[in-house]
Length: 329
Ligand code: ASN
Ligand code: ZN
Ligand code: CA
Ligand code: CA
Image (cartoon, rainbow, N blue to C red; front, side, top):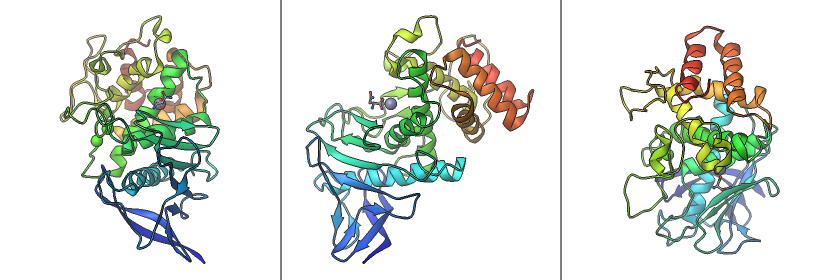
């Protein structure tokens, strides 16, 4: 027999969480059969191919520490659930391809592997364990949201992963990764506009891979558009759109949260994360194409704001002001 169940997982970064599991004749497997066409999580055990689905006798998974291989599996499986729910409940999207296919997750990939990635060929997410000093296991919520969003982008605008479109592709993953983190509303990993704060340099508190409110804080990302930004790494040219999104959602001087200096000296008022996320999702799925650059992204998001809120609405004007504030005119 096999039947949908609900397990308790002790994760590395999100505390004790509920995860979708599947009851079989021999116990439980880490497979959620209730969302879309279902998804599961596998243990690579330090290898780069193969892997097997996590199983458990009593449906209480992991210990919350790396001494138990299932703990990172819990984070990944929970991250996939929250990301699925974010897209479904916020945008009405059923899975990564919109038709219920939502991929699967692989953890403990390779040895000391300092990365996580989405792959179109396996239609899956993969997480390394990190080397323990640059990264701990890369299974945090914002990373899960980031990587799964690469799948969504691939099945929608399909932004080419180089030049300005590549920066927009990366920013789209940071934007929705952050909105997934806020959506989870998990007290162990509260929402913020830093990417990877739970996994990056464990010896240094409070830092992260990228900072949406002031991308240049990472030492490489750009706060403002300039001609030639298409020549830098896509994880750095993303800074302009990350900065745009923060200004659009939160504003340049939010009541709570970090200030975000604008490139044109103007003050910008935020319209909130929900409206900003709806605008970006519609721009991505309706108006952007594989060759969209920053100028075209401005037009795409203005069209999306027009559809959702009307031309000349507060939201439309905020989109225009936030792009101008990052030098995209
Ligand atoms: N973690 C990285 C990313 O999602 C992997 C890569 O560089 N492709 O962008
Ligand atoms: Zn990425
Ligand atoms: Ca967080
Ligand atoms: Ca974060």
